[in-house]
Length: 465
Image 1 (cartoon, helix red, strand yellow):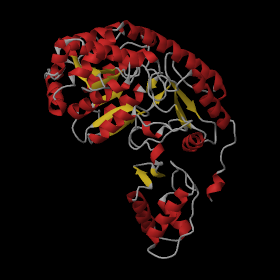
Image 2 (cartoon, helix red, strand yellow):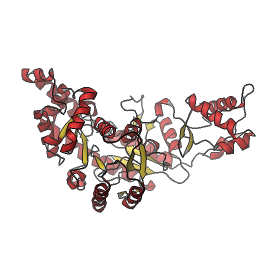
Image 3 (cartoon, one colour):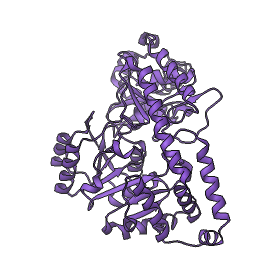
Image 4 (cartoon, helix red, strand yellow):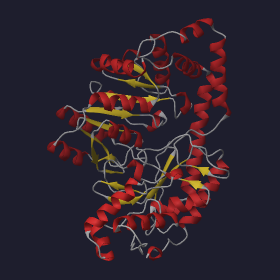
């Protein structure tokens, strides 16, 4: 939290002058993006005004888009447009010249990605039957043949492979959106790790659900804490990424998986198991859908193993929910475009797709080793097989400050705030993604910049006096 007491400009109501001083401080860098502002009473005492005046000033600043209020946490300076994380990340934004963007979880670039899609599309154009099918309406869940092909592909990856329980979606995020909107009602409690995937946070917000942040540690969600929360008021559903928490990389231990299932059965809770952050099969634990198939909904997609732009995913769901979710699919978009589904299926069946995945696993392992060695002095955390590095910051460093300083040096990273469930305070850490850098050498250059920055003394807080 900054120590900030502005000199007020002349003229106009005091609350408006305070808001204008705030805007000027943000513009000249005196107040940094992500900076927490003083509590209202504290600033009122410093400026010799009433708390009501400060309340109106903060409200005006928020109305103008300069700050944001977080329930139970305080008021913060909003990030600049190019760094904005509210309330969800923005994918697909081109980086400027010389900028290395390791803020998004993407698969590493490889020519086989474009080649695989090209061959799939060429195969479709050469097939009158495929072209005809692509012009016709299909069942909401996808055609039986396409569902069987996707299920077979998932089976080769060690994932749920029952085509009768599989629904085709427009990516993993679409699947999450469907589930939170149709398994819960506005005002229902939904639980997730205290730090979790922003896509779930965003979907829950849009569905007007109440977030329940469950404490976590290196072994994932704290089941004792979850049991206490359930005893007071059980959530309608629990969202979890048991094999690889995003952003911390924590893995839910086997005993905790068993207890999670037991609690879900005891309190009649749905479980959303998100497996989109792909890990090799030997690095995963027992799937929750195998432990509790009657109440687990499994989310997967092509985004981390083939290409995010395909927007093809799957939901594997209990039989009793199929009709309900098919109705939701029909009301939203009738069906996933069959042309894109066919392209994805043909790419999945191309032998090069298996070679691409083998290369990706090896490349990410090499990048992970490089990152752990380069950042060893700062205690980086990363699961074997993961494409994420969770980097706690040295004492005295703030994630917003480090993110801004790295951006000035041409490296984009993620701070914890978008991953916070509800109003939980964010730890001082950054997330680094190993995949998106063009080459291993590009990633090494970005890691060197991170290392150099963290070895420098932190910015003095007295600069904001």
